[in-house]
Length: 257
Image (tube, rainbow, N blue to C red; front, side, top):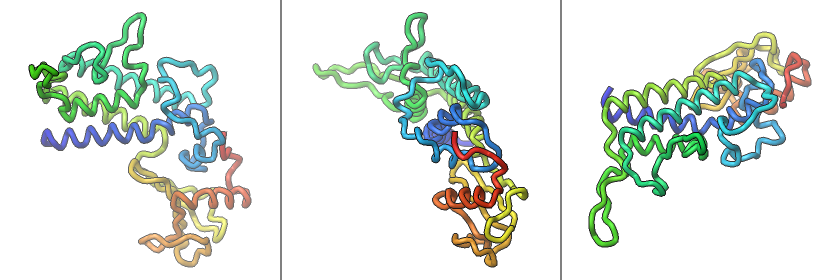
């Protein structure tokens, strides 16, 4: 893999982590569920999911006296800790930004969490800046003198370390949320319209979708996919979950926390 491709893939993984971080925070406060309803849908149906990620303190700085999903809590702490540690490593190698510079990554100390207080989103953005070699040119001061660059160019061996760490974090987060690439048949919850077998499709770059094995003969009020199957896309899934509940096919699984 070329250096440019490695940077691109690592930056993409960081952005995936940021995009799904709110779902992981909600998962900590949501009882674990089986296939139904899809995890993202369960979060959407929560009454309190309007809380902004930015309003929530980093996991390492706040208590969870009674987490409802310990697996999600462990994953969140592991991902957050790994990315904070990676930022520490990169800062030690390439950072020259002076104290007080908003671009600076500040280390944790016995009396201060440093930049960790800003949370995972800031850590991801900061690491991305180092991967893209931002702010690596000398800067002109008011008196036209040149100040040293705030950061050095990231050396290849640290790009390799960053890519390994970030991809591992992305994989764990998506796996915990059930958003890794997978196709799951759910024969115990047949289609409410035709009794066909339903299949849940998930992936890191797609919202959950459900298809019915019957095909065009199924009378469900949703379109056909490219394979001729009735498909419930993201916006249609609440109707499918409601229909399954009405048919008694949810197996007692909670729709929301």
